[in-house]
Length: 459
Image 1 (tube, rainbow, N blue to C red):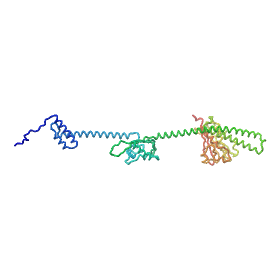
Image 2 (image 1 turned 30 degrees about the vertical axis):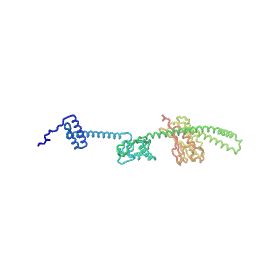
Image 3 (image 1 turned 30 degrees about the horizontal axis):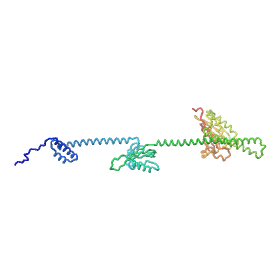
Image 4 (image 1 turned 90 degrees about the horizontal axis):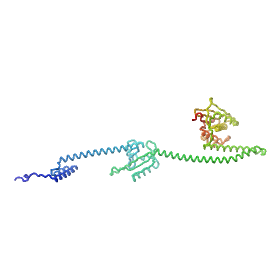
């Protein structure tokens, strides 16, 4: 008996919209299975289709392959874009004009841009061996301050410190403002904290502030000194006035008594000479103190003219000729063969300086010694040297030369004086743009030089 199933006609699915939709859904599910790598499930799903609008396994594989290639191209493009962005950010980090660093959670250096490497004296790129930023910080409180800064940035996300002292590897001390902040977390599963650090150099600003502060302190000190000088000037002027009146009275009455010595007992007459001499010395001291005070305050009245230093030297020698008697000192003057140029100065003050130098050279000379004046000049200045053959000045005495009321040990000798002469002479020289210097001093004597600017070289 023939098989009835064999006689049945082949089952043909009618093509309907519903069958087409069914095949599309089957193909979509099969494609998803194929994406997951489940080929058998994809084939089984295709067998459930009507065959009227679905896909064969070969077509499905081709579709999957095309889709995979498209995804691969898209992934490659995305990766290339990501690498380009990362490269751009790396270049941006390197090109930052301010020193920038990436630190670990404990402050160890991970990355540093070129500006940071130059600033800290580090090689670029950084060596593999880790180095802590704390190494560059100086100061007794650096450790505690650095730990507090790290604690602050962990709590608040950022922290900064102004005017931090740094010692780069170059050895040059720096002052910088340091700012820290937390970097965004790259991988939440890893405990890998990164801190961003920037350094702003404040060395020049700190130097300016320090200079301004020093200038302000100096100005205050100058003002205090000026006020003190003014107060001293006023006080000395009042004291001078108060002293002159009784001194003039003492001297006047002494001179009256000297004019009629017969009224005094013989034994009292020497006392009168002592009173008059002491009064004259005290009045001279008052005048010298006032004079040096005016010179220090810049209140000297000078008559600056063209003068012959040679003529003033000759006159000064003549004025001191009578003082050479006790020691029998010889006064000499060496003049240049040519006519010396004119000097610029106050003739009366120049004469006072020369007389003082000659007087000192006589007082502190040896018995039958010599005082010699030598005139010289160059393209800018003209000078006169006053040398003696005394005992000279040692290094300790030279260190205190020109100090008011310092007689450099001569107060123990017989020579009279108050230790103001050289101080007044130095003040006169400074006021005339001159110089008063000790040229040399030894056991064979000393040499002082008065130097003044040439009149014909002044603008």
